[in-house]
Length: 434
Image (cartoon, rainbow, N blue to C red; front, side, top):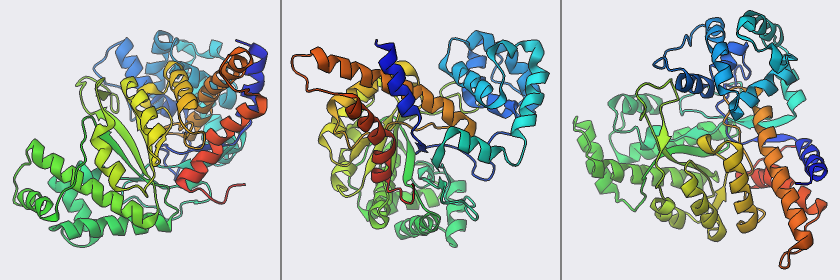
């Protein structure tokens, strides 16, 4: 590894502004108010629970108590990239070094975080320091979006209530309340989707999105078949697995129809298995199948050639399949490195795969999945360093490889800028950025 070349590439890439296409940030607050809220991020509670088991029980409602409880466990996870994120937050934003993170120092750390983070000007200071220019949110159909700063934030619609939660009577009732009438027909479903899209478009909608269960299947479904399944649910009957599959395929097509009408992408996040670990912390109970496939999406990818599908996958076994899909399919775009793949080893592999095999105008480099704006900088730095490594390696290989075209510094920087700036702007349709 040519350290000087990697450093030069990293410094140049790190200077690029940040467009973060997927987060869970609460736009009304944006930042954390103290270090206890940072430590409430499920990565820290789930790692602490894994390293020193306490049945998922943490004082989530008391940030000060949570800080006191988590701090002694941090030594057990100091090898992890999540710890690295925390130390970057500490150095960059709190001006505290790793040596100060001693268990007996917890009150000093908490008080210091209040001094910095619990100020009305903190959000603007952080955004300027981190050079964040656009943040995409995760929103439910009935979220309050009034007052949203659309020059900085873009709301993104989570579609699970329409597709995977629709068998729940309480979810149907909530959707009906939003629509203004009970949902009793497939046309009512289309109507509530239309009302939702119109609301989101008024507030600068980014895209529709779905965290999709493993083994999901899409296929054509006639209205009368979907209505039959809906009638059974309205009569109080429980769907069997085939009926659930049928409704999900039908409702996903309805979302795709809306994406087509409104010119919005559909961000697929493929392969999660929910609630598999009974003793886990909130948001730390989910895993994935090592054997999962994108073949279940063949129907919608073929039926909606005019809809863009940025796609993230959970399992490393699906990483190559996603690369191959983006290789041949014009409307599939590899998007970031999701969840358990969001760490250097898997990022490094997938970057190299995508650079080698996917057209250069298609890969969306990274998203943070952050719950607070503070996490965006350390997470993007992690990615940018692995990108600099991969590009430096390609530059060096091109000097001696018998079958590789020259790849210089300008080529590397152009590729990085495309992956982090131009590709997401074009694929998602971001405008108004300098």
